[in-house]
Image (tube, rainbow, N blue to C red; front, side):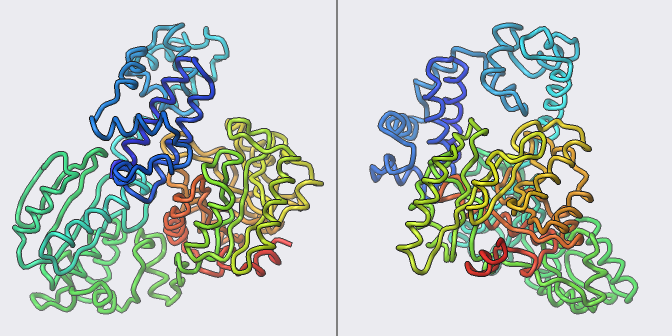
Amino acid sequence: MRNDEVAALLYEIADLLEMSEEDRFRPISYRRAARSVEGLAEDIEDLARQGRLRQIPGVGEAISEKIQTYLKEGKLDYLEELRKRFPPGLADIMRIPGVGPKTARQLYFDLKITNLDELRAAAEQGRLRKLKGFKEKSEENVLKGINLLKAGQGKFLLGIALPLAERVVAHLTANAPLDQASYAGSVRRMKEEVHDIDILVTTTDPEAVTRVFTTMPFVREVVESGRTKSIVRTAPEGMQVDLRVLEPKSWGSGLMYFTGNKDHNIKLRTLAQKRGLKLNEYGLFREEETVAGATEADVYRALDLPYIEPEMREDTGEIEAAVAGKLPALVTEADIRGDLHAHTNLTDGVNTLEEMAAAAQAKGYAYLGLSDHSPSLRVANGLSEDHLRIHVGHIREFNRKSRDFKLLAGTECDILADGTMDYPDSVLKDLDYVIGSVHTRFKMAQKEMTARVIRAMENENVDIIAHPTARKIGQREPIALDLEKVFSAAADTRTVMEVNAYPDRTDLNGPYAKLAKEHGVSLIIDTDSHSVEQLDYMRFGVGTARRGWLEKRDVVNTKSHEEILTFFR
């Protein structure tokens, strides 16, 4: 599928148009189309062949023609002409948190800065503060942003790595003589960022499996090819994928070894040694005799342990909990009854109320909460009070006609700098629930930021705090919060903390979700969807929640429609 490739193309056009300052509406159109394309469940090439590109929300005639041309020819003259206007290094500069197309344009025209190295030098020399709107603090933030960008090189979001791992397993299963196949490593632990993908198989014909693996259509480079281990890099991601061929008798022990992190595996080996056993990727042995190895459950059982779920295998107390018989029964995606953080095309989403509702119902949900933005978030086209009331009216009308599926009327309301809310209480009290979010003033000191969020939670109308640390992986560092104080206040005010499933957020992350649970806080797993396809991000949120040891009882949206309305009331 070339969906991400086409989406990246549209985002680049939007950035170049914004830098060109030709028309402020055209970049918005291209970004909306890009969001739709990257969230597609179908292959965009299939849609193009079927003449259905115009069915993608936000894709009109002009954008449709450009996508068709690019898919047929592999290039787009329109984009090439735009690229000629600016040095290619500006694209890297725009990846710095807080540096968008307008700032990149200013840096280029006013200071002749064309790449990251020149920008770093200018910031270190104090030349950026000469620009309008730049101060000494701005230079510090630029340098931090460059370091953040460099630190993220070679890492891939789970939202990219997991679908790719599944794609590899599916391709091998369909085309190679396999007995068993699975991905392992940090992808199986649902870690938010991963360096590479481990694929494990058992087979009676290793050479055939290796041949299929190294000739997959999305392989860019074969790094190594052997009977038991092969390595490739994929296109367009450039991600490393390792294939390991195991003996059937070692399948479970190999899967354990390549799934658990280093510390988890060391502790298991220590347990084995205390029992006079030896544990490695080939099995559990007493001298030369194989004790276990064919399945993971067999190996754990032979160590007098219950099965430990993959997401927990990071030496954060899971082995001690297993020994004590206190492992949690982790929440599953099947437990989720609805999603309460979703946007429509009234603000910065791409689908209508009806389309979002139909997609949620198709997933088997009992309800969907619509939480479009409040007015101060102008970049997201936030709703005025009057427009919000009209929107709520449409939701109530939908519910009158729908028996088996319901919509909840909510808002993602900005928490202003002083902790007050962007809508007055007279508006908030008429909604089914209210999400409070920090979208501005990210650089506040910890004391002030903590007070800001706690004041919002003390508002009796605020039910949920979305993406509580406001981080964006590789783009923006977390805001400065005293999470111990925030979670204590959340427990006191019965405010729910969100595990945001959007791949570049996963916020709260696993350890923070676990800390919130330990403070007696209720949590909710939401997708922050801006299109119908993004409702499928729920699995990333559930994986993150499982990393935080969350059980069904800890997660609010495992409740029924009636129960969740009662909970928020």
